[in-house]
Length: 273
Image (cartoon, rainbow, N blue to C red; front, top):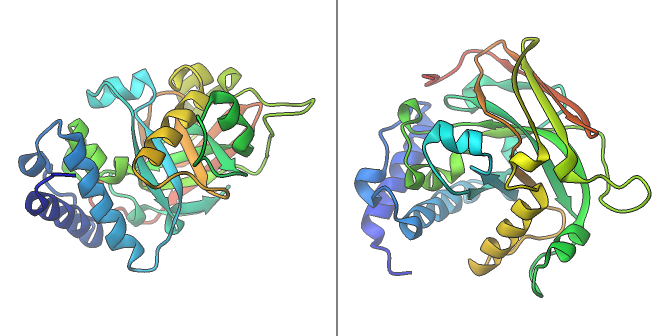
C-alpha cells in the first residue's frame, strides 16, 4: 500500500479521540479525500489496531451499505465493511448504554455465525453457504464518530463502517437440512417504541445476504485477513436505518428467524441526529 501514512495517522487519531471523549468529530475527508478507498481502509486498520491493543478483540465483521435505502440515506453507491469488537455484542433483550454508541441508528439484519474458515478455494456461493453454521436475527446499532453523520464513502469506511454495537437473537437456523433457512426470503419489520419504522426483505441486501457474505469473504481474503470459523458476520441492512434515543426500545422481527430487541438506556453522549 502506497498511502501516505501521515494523513492516515491524523485521521485515525481524530476518530479515536471522538470515541474516547464521546464527542463527534469533523469528517476526515479533509485528510484522506472523499473517495480514496485505500486510504480509508488504512485509517480503519489503524483504528482497529489501537482498539485491539486495549484488549478488545475482533470477533467478526460487518458489511455496510448493502441496502439501496441505506445507500440513499448516506449518499453512497457501494458496500463497505468493518470489524466487530467483543465489547460491541449484547444479548437479546439487553439494555445497551446510550453512551456506548455515538449518534445511534438501528437497522435490522441477518447475522451469520461461521462454522468454517473462508480462506481457501474459489469462495463460490456454495462454499460460502456451507461455511455458515447458523443464522440469527440481529439489530446493528450503527454509530458515527463523525458529527451529524456528515459522511462521504471514505469517512464511513475510515470510521470502521460506522459500527457501534449489535444485538443477536436467540433462535438459530441452519442453511441446510429439511428446515433450511433461505436468507433472501427473509421478511423484516422493525419497530421503535411500538411504531413500525422500517421494513424490508432479504433481497434488499445485495439481492441475497449470502452474496453479501461472499463479497466480504473475497474482500477480507484479498486484504490478508480472511473470515474464520466462529466469527459473527452482520450481513447488512434489510431496510432503512432509524435514529434511536435514550429510553427507546427497538424490536425487529426477521421472519422466520424470530425476534430480537434491546433498549437504549441512560444518557447519550454526542447524540446529535
